[in-house]
Structure formats: C-alpha cells, structure tokens
Image (tube, rainbow, N blue to C red; front, top):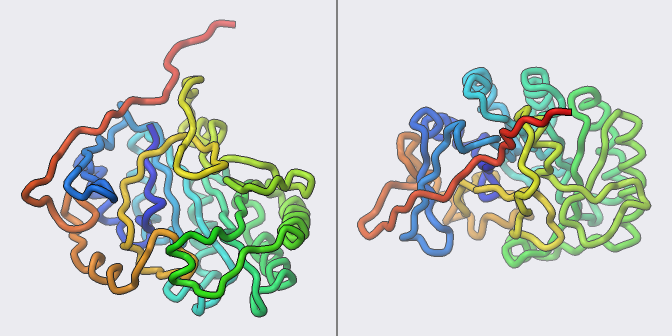
Amino acid sequence: MLIFASGRTDIPAFYSQWFMNRVRAGFVDVRNPYYGEQVSRFKLTRDVVDCFVFCTKNPAPMLPYLEELKSLGIGLYFFVTITPYDKDVEPNVPEKSAVMDSFIELSNALGKDRVCWRYDPIFCDEKYSVSFHIKAFRSMAEKLHGSTDRCIISFIDLYAKTKKNFPGVKEVSENDQKFLASSLSRIAFENGIKIESCAEKLDLTSCGVEQGACVSREVIEKAANIHLLQKIGVSVLRKHCICLPTSDIGAYNSCPHLCKYCYANYDARLVAKNHAVHNPQSNFLLGESKEGDILKNARQKSFRDEQLFLF
C-alpha cells in the first residue's frame, strides 16, 4: 500500500517531526474527516507499506530525516509544488528560490526519479497572465534542470472551498490552456523534463502534455525498487484521476500556508485553531484520542509482487 503525506495538509513543511515520531512508533491514528469518532490505525512498517508519497510546498524540514527514512527500506517519492505566485496568493510559502534550493538538495539525496515538480494549480488574471506563466516557468525549469525528469501541471478547479477563499478567480479558458500547455511542454523538453497532466478533463496530448497519473505504477516501482501486482485498482478521489490508490494520513484545515486556491482549507481561523492543538508526540496529527472514539485497524496489504518470474 501507499501512504500519502498528504493531500489534506503539508506534512513535510509543518509536521515533519510528528511524522518521524509516528514512523519510529510504527503506526499512526487517522480520524475520518467526515465521521470524527471513526479512527483508523495504519501501520507504517515495510511489511505493508511500499512507498511514502509526500506532497509539499517546502521540503526543507524533511531533509534532515532522509537518511533515516532511506534506511527503512520503504520507497520515497516527493511531489514539490513550486509556482510563481506572490504572497497575495501564497502568503506563507517560503521564497521560491529557497524552495528550489531544497528541491535540488532533495534530488541530490534521493535521485531525480524520486522527486517531481508540480506547477499547479495554474490560473490567469491581470497580474498572473499567460505570458507571466511562460516566463516564470522557463526560469524555474532552467534552475531545476537535471534535478527532476518530471513535471505535473494542472489548471485551477473551482471547488467550493476555493471559491470561498479566492473570490473572483476564474477557470482558464480552453484556448489559454492549450497555448500554455504547448509553451510549457516545449520549455520542459528543452530542460530534460517530461510534462504531464493529472485529472484534467481537457485532453492536452496534442499540445505535448501527456495525460498521466501523479502516482503511477512506473513512478512507484522506480521509487521503491519493486514490482507491483497487476491488479491494484485506481484512486476514486477525483474524476479523471487514474492514480494508484493511496491512504492519506493528513487532516483538513490544518495547513498554515493558507494558499488562496487551496481546496483542503476552509477557514483560516480554524486552521490556526487546529494547528495550535498539534502535539508532535500524539498518535494523531491534530489533538489526542477522545472518549467515544471507535478505533479500528486499517485494512492494509503490500502491493509488492513477490513472485519470481523465469524467462
């Protein structure tokens, strides 16, 4: 199985010490985001976990733990989101030059096939125009040249939380999507980077952007140095998504980056309240166990194909 850390919050940026404490303990307790009394306990051990999949805007806090993580024999794969937006959109994300430096350090430690650059979500307005994105993407691609061979792009989806926190933002027109996709794919190619989309309803293959999966069989097999079973299934979290299934150990409304386009935060005050009850020693990302909790062991099994084939 694959542990996702996380699509609900930025665990590497804000909760790396907690994550490592849970890895050392060998398990983590995760509340159901919709039925809070239901708690799933996930083992974090090699017999059931094939790969840790991280998603972050700031990998720097995880860098000191990489050697310890590598020693576990569990695969590691990092998605690092680096976009060109200023503090008006991403108020608490570190300076992008620092994030790119951390990306390069991460790549040097793990290998470029275990680190993916995410340039998403893409939206356009008067300040962040099509030409702005092309110029910014070129600058970033040139700096990340040699540190990754993969970039995922996506265009903004107007989830209810996004529209609440980012009033006035609009979807990118189909023409602009195609023009940007063609331009970014050409720049990526020039810098040795393959560009893909994930869960996009518009087919951009004619623009040089493959319809891919963030968490694909090929990616995980390389990251974990294993062969996967043929019948695993796909994620059912988003329409058009063909990623392998993952188990998310994060919690919504707990990411202090407070990016305006975020679908995982609903209210900044709630984020502050939740972040304040975080205890790095707890089994839970937020708070502690409660009276009335219904704790069950999660159903877990490795996706490894242990059968030996003779040719």
